[in-house]
Length: 335
Image (cartoon, rainbow, N blue to C red; front, side):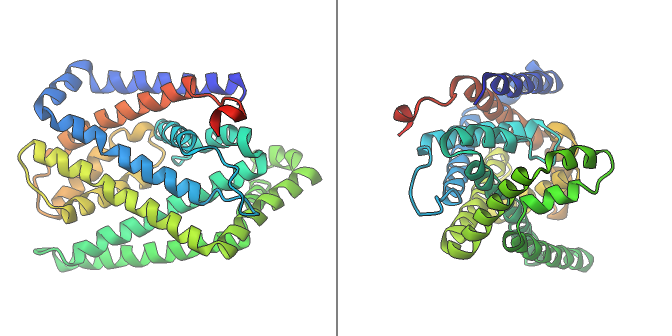
């Protein structure tokens, strides 16, 4: 990837890290680390298997059309996964700011078309796993004791919405994604001028080729598609251990079922308010509402959110550093 893109993403990351540290406060960070003691190492470490599963999922959708394995090795995928999520977290672009970075890095290995189809396919699977995870969370609420009938009805409605959304998202694989998206941009005021100029015959053919690769993967590699979706959904369940460990650190014992409900509610709330950079305020608000829904102390929502934010800060710093120090090497260095 060209040096200017590395510097661009690096600058965004450094600015966001500075804002996060200023927002949390050095004193608050050190106080919370002391409060959670050795638990904090475990809280940070939980994201390691999560990113591991994310990487495996992305690898599943990065198949060569002929079945050949010409992708970068797992370590390179792992680096791009962590850095991509770091950029996603700090950019208010529907949490998709890291996708351009991944494409630019990936194209150095497999070319622009393969890189774009790979990243788009994984992004859609990532979104699809959101709805599956939310459906699981609201499904667990239905069997949770002492839940009011009105809340059960709301949960059923959300489950149906998630199932319907997942159905329509899966349809995109058959109908194509990239070309249709650019055609949509050509109808939006202001943006349509840029999109129309961009849509040359060669560019349109490239987009259709990318869509063909996406549809081919979904139709002819269904096992790999389902495996990738399973791994991505599993990563969300594993990520719930972070909340479980934070609660244990403050002597408030919960089980995995409760942590899934809390995580699903928090995730839904944060995604509804997707425009908030670094999820400022949305995570804490979602945690408070989720804790209230299952009769747990809502006052702990702020502390849990703060602990999660400090953990996120660690992985953002690591991801940003990878942008700078893990640039692509020559082919014989990565095989």
